[in-house]
Image (tube, rainbow, N blue to C red; front, top):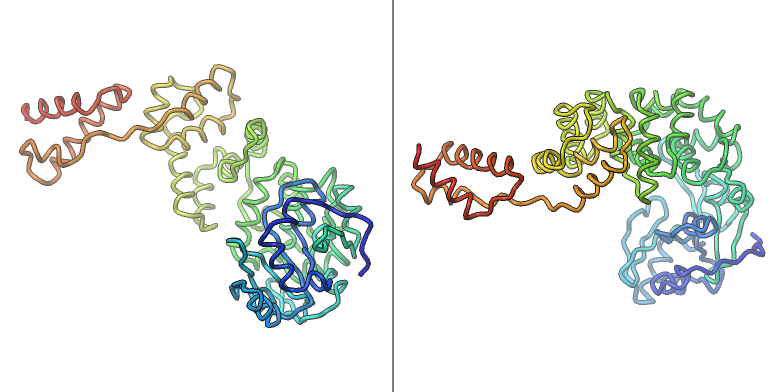
Length: 409
């Protein structure tokens, strides 16, 4: 594999941990190179998060060399030739060059090789099959650099073959286009995805969920999702969404704030389809926190619908009862764009710290109220007055109200 005349110089190339791992496994012998996302994102001019390394060494040889260098490691993916080296408090995945022996559309059996071109040809997209020496010299065996320059996401080799090896690559194709593509999708790749879309049904919900949430975090996911919807791709993995237009508005608002929120964008995608959204959250096995967020958003929708923005006091009251996040979701997902005044209300809500109710059950018991439901009822009544008063009463004032309430029976 011949080097290109392209050379990068990025801070991560000088990362102490990365330098130590590369030195340990033979960077000076050209048997270890950086690979994949870190090289791709460097060429795209984007921040690099994970630093992955490919090597001609077997996993056993990698572990032996790491031990010799005094570095620790974790056997995270030995079945696929991957060892996670640990240096300077960080993990670096080190994977032996390999090729697929057998695939079933979901997973592959692999064999090791020392041929860099063979390793490159087994990868999914040309922009992901890029390598770099420790000094930043780029290797481009399948013409990924021209595709980066063109903003083109395309499969390596025959698209159908790459997809049949792992049907998740259909979703990865759309996700990578949303993140890195410019203009229309690669027609041959798109045609293969449409032809083989039924294979998506064999994937686990965890893998589907991860890809779709990452896609939703991209700069303009609505354009890619619209193509997926029109071509029946989305219909294979999720209910038909009615809120592509709403999603576009939410993305515009978030992009203006240099922010992206996958769950809020999912909520926007299903605006007006509350029950569908709840079922999707269950089917996708979202985290309890994510499901609670969607449920709280639903409570706000049920309470306010699509009415004009309530007063700041009402917003704070709802934020206390449901969460600031639920109110923000409602404000941004409504079909009525925020004007300047309401944007100020939003900013005010974000700056507001949700207060903690100053009283507790012990305060009620101290006044002679017996244990049981009466304690909770007394607290709830005082808390309701505190909320109604926009949280202005302090602990002393609330204790006085509580004493009066208990005295009056």
